[in-house]
Image 1 (cartoon, helix red, strand yellow):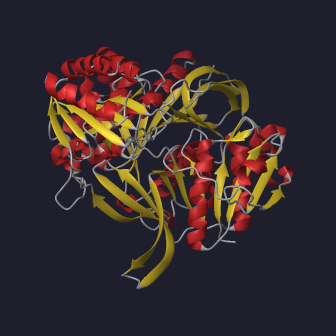
Image 2 (image 1 turned 180 degrees about the vertical axis):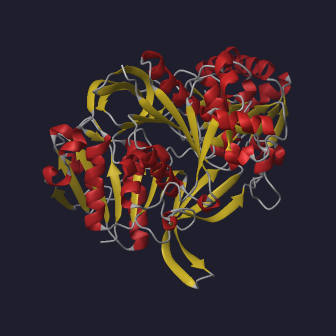
Length: 339
Length: 291
């Protein structure tokens, strides 16, 4: 009881990266809280999946296997998760901040009347003292996220109404096997006891899932543009530089919102979190929401007209100048020197 | 054809996309006064989806429902200028401090009071929080199914609605009986502009609070024409339990807010000169960052 739970998303017959990252984080939270780590797996036909999961240090896997549970639809998954939470009373429940997690977690939070913090960039355990009531809370989950235009970092807690729930984007937490030989137990659920007919009213008529062609997470060099790039046309320069260096193109939310590039290239709190060897920030001012998605880059080069843009504080090199001048020169000298 | 009864949930938000230097006060709190208040962008996509249902189904009625301070009536009028039929503003000091759970409780109580509805449509998320929680939470409290991230209305008839959803790595077309709650993704069609006829019709639409400061002519106009009346509902009107509102109804608390202070790291400042660029590229190749 009072354990840490992670809802695991399934991608065909394997567990999604974001869920494995959360199991890794969940394990460290469970160790800190001196409790167990439990995983929820809902879908169909996932033989042998426990092998993928146990090694992250999972003590219990709850499995709901039924043809109607895959692909994901909200209601049956929500019913199963809600009943599991009711039966097990975990203290922490984590979901990926994915299309699935962001659809499911709020429905569950509403049904269980508990708090939920979206898109956390850090999770820690700590205490809380309420002076007014002279009441001390031990070992709460600190749910940390940038808020409000990125000008502030907020630490959110749910002192009273548990479980404490949070969603986290893919790539924010590290994925690390705990112990290759770790063994826990499997709890197979009788799906009919956890769902009802109403749960299956939504019918999926058509479904096209494509593996993203953009691989920002795996790129070792990223050329990223912000609103300061100025236009979709100007982004061509960034693509050219990325091509020459063997990198990938990304951008800030402002650039995506302005229509300069596709959403799947967005880097930051509500996009992808990246850890490249080199990050070239072009015309990016560097709001917190963007920085939390790229500040683990080994090296940052900023190209900006404004020498005082916030990004300059985290950049290793600040090139003060116009993209239209700087980028062609970088390409030129790269070609000359790399031979 | 009797048309459909649609409730569109909308929020007036500070425009966090254009945060200026004075957006934060010295004590680290948000200076809402200097931020322009706008119609939450994805709620406009939601309104457009409702308007498209109305285009295809004469007799459809769109009610715009918003929760916020009295000035949020502005976005109700904006929605009316674009084709919404009526508006309700839920406002009460007792809502202050509500997180998404308490907010969704209040909104669901208001939708329950409206009672007669086929579809509830909201934006996927509001730009001041980006949580995308209120839509699914309202659906849960109304005990109706939800379709999130809608991109396109495929079809609607008396039995069911068919919606194309935009997922992070693909699309999905789903069909669902009504009533249902739909949240709309920014990739859905943009909202049509104001319509001159609607603008004329609803120009003087006002809440009771606004009428207190209106001219006698405006006041008599509103009392003559019922459709100009933007209803205000309080905690009592929606029969909400105050325990579940505001701070007491909000499980999440802000423990701490930190101003972001950038720790300057040692960085080299370069110009765009050929010399600087050549040296930089050489350095990067030497330390195997590139090449």
